[in-house]
Length: 452
Image (cartoon, rainbow, N blue to C red; front, side, top):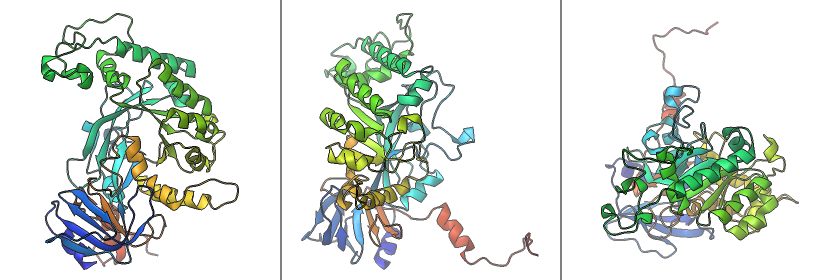
């Protein structure tokens, strides 16, 4: 597409772009719109759908015969935090020897030039929910939402959530049993609750301290250099302070659980701490208690195709899990915890497509095409509290747009163009450079090491 190539050659800046004639998918679960138009202006979606007028002066791209969609939102990932798992110097996913846990913030560790960023961007992934992993505690720390743009400012929302492990992993982190993990969690929440926040802090210009980061409240006696706390506390003061927004319901709590009983125990936490805003991650046995999850109105970011149990807590795993939870009214999206989530988040389109196929197998539950695509775009955005910002082509959303040469849930489909915040992105990456380098190898001075 010559127009796309010419636009990509321009300086990286948000422009007014009209993409016309394509099959437009809004990403919100609605039907595709044939012959639609998407207009991006000032880095945002200005309009999308049928009968949309092309603004004067806009750069027009003819997408006839193509699919035009919002960018893929990776529902759970660790992209940008590691290059080589076994090389500690490149791996910032977890801090096994740190004195801190809940206070850890992944943002300083995110590398927007990690090789996996460009590879996944070229596959249509434009945003990712990035989480730390746990080290010596059930608390992994605070995760972020990032974009996969080719610049050095990747963060969409810092400190978007606190991540914790319960279930088998949490039991291990807490000393060997689930009972210990829940006792540790409840104790940590109470330590956070004991941080008495003064109201009317001068640093907050008259606003309630409950609406401010605790480290910004200069009068707080537990944050001052000479702070004193009870001697029986288990958390550092910074870890306890980091849990205050969770306790107040200002920060999401993402909880990794798989077993049905662990899911119910997690939901029960709201009885003791009613302001918690929970999101379940994994939930391989979620279908068993889907009615309870739906009644609690708790979103789930689930692995799509878990059916061969990798642990005892996944004995009831089934590929129908997401379909069954969706049918029960659960707000469910696709994530990839413990599934090469630092590099291969691009396969979420394949997972979504497989859920469409599973729905056609007698006796199994999957998703419709519309819902499957929403499960990798608007649904994870909504789960993380950014549904008004990313994940769809509704007016006002960030200008994350992808042009595909066919159905984006089909394996043979390729990405032809990507915009993030209205800026067209390069699709070049290490893999494409290697492909181009060796597609037609030239005779050189190096020896033919394996000639016979």
